Image (cartoon, rainbow, N blue to C red):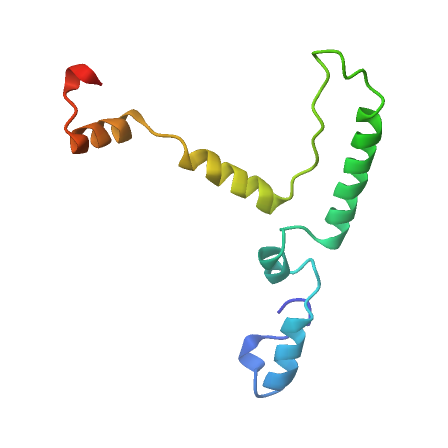
Amino acid sequence: MRFYGASLDEGGKGVSWRDMAAMVAHLPSESALRREEGDGWSEAERLLAQIADSTYIAWWQRIDHDNPDAPPLRRVLSPRERAERADAAREDVYTRADMDRIADALGIPEDRR
């Protein structure tokens, strides 16, 4: 628990278990635990992403949307959202070996694949 300068080895000795539990419950947003259980951002990063999104939206509202080359409206994705999208993209991709294994399981002959 680097934010408090305490070690888990001290639990029950120099620092009570109750105090340890309170420290864990009130960890700052920059801690590894808070990042893992949240969206992966600290409070400062979240505010910067909101500023970037607001600036992009303000610019996007002023462009010519009848132009076919106009960029789409998009926002800054959190690390958790990026990881979820990457996982979803990987789930939908089948390799040639996967397709052959499925075809073999279904009994599809080689010349019909």
